[in-house]
Image (cartoon, rainbow, N blue to C red; front, side, top):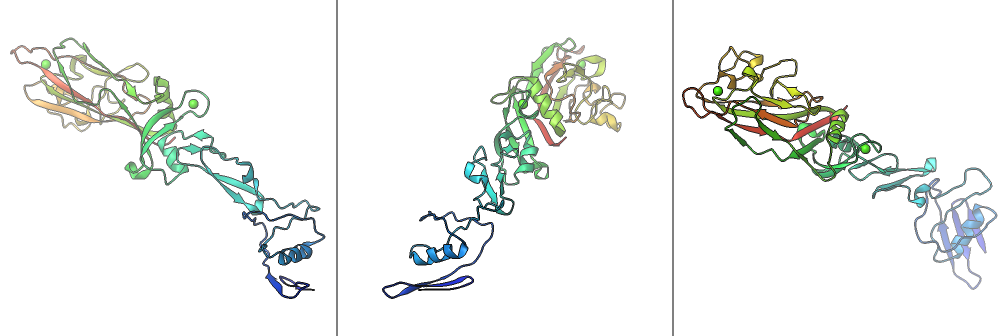
Length: 321
Ligand SMILES: [Ca+2]
Ligand SMILES: [Ca+2]
C-alpha cells in the first residue's frame, strides 16, 4: 500500500508496519555515498517508492536520460587535476575547476609557477620555502629550484637566488685595474645557465641585488680600477643605490654627499680612512652580477697597505612583469 504526495511518501509493508520518506530535491548535486543499487524507472515518483521500500535507502540520484541535460557527478571523476590539486565540482555547469597546490598553475595545475610572485598570486596560502619555478613557461629553459620569501615586500612573493660569493670577502694585493676577479656562481638544484636567471628577471617586475665595497685607500671607479660584469657580460661602472645612467657613481654621488665631493663614490676619496659604498643595484636588465673586478689594493706611495672587502647579496626578484 502506497501513499504519495510531492516530497512525501508512505510505504505500507504487506505484513504490517511501514516507512515514511520525505525527500528534498537538490538539483545539480550528487551523492558520494556508496551506491546500494541502480534501477530503470518510469519516473521520479517510482524511484521515490523504491527508495522508501528499501530500509537502507535514504536518498537517491535521479537522472533523466532522455533529455540533453544528463545529470552526472561532474568531470572530477576523471581525476583531471594534476600535482595533488583538489578537483572542485561545479554541478550547475556540469564542470569543475582545479585548486592548485602552491607552486603550480594552469587549468589542470600541470605547470610550474613562473616566479615566487606568480606562485603567490595563484595561491595566497603559499608559505616561505623552496619551490621549483619555470620563469619562461613550459618551453625554453629548464625549471630550477629557488627560495621563496612570501612575507617580505608586502607579501608579493620574492624569489631569492643565492650564490657562492655572499660572504664578506677580502681584496688585497691586486694593484692593476680589475686584476682581482671574483666569479659569482648562482646556486640551486636545476640551475645551470645564466639564461635561466635572465628569464626570471624578464618575468619579474623588479629585481635587485645588494652590493657593498669597504675600502682602505682602494678606489672604485676613479681611474677605472673597479667594475662589475652584468649578465650580458658587460662591464658596469655604476654602484648600488645608483643607476646605469649615472656612470662612475655610487649612491653618495647622486646627491653630492661623497667623502670627497669631487668624486662619485666614497671610496674614490682614496685616503687612509676605512670607507664604504653600498646599496642595491636595481636595473633588472643588468642583473644578476656575474663577476666582481677590483684593483688598487697594493701599496700606495706612502707605504700604506690598500685593501677592500666586497659583499654581494642574493639575487632577488619580485612582482609580475
Ligand atoms: Ca621553461
Ligand atoms: Ca689607492
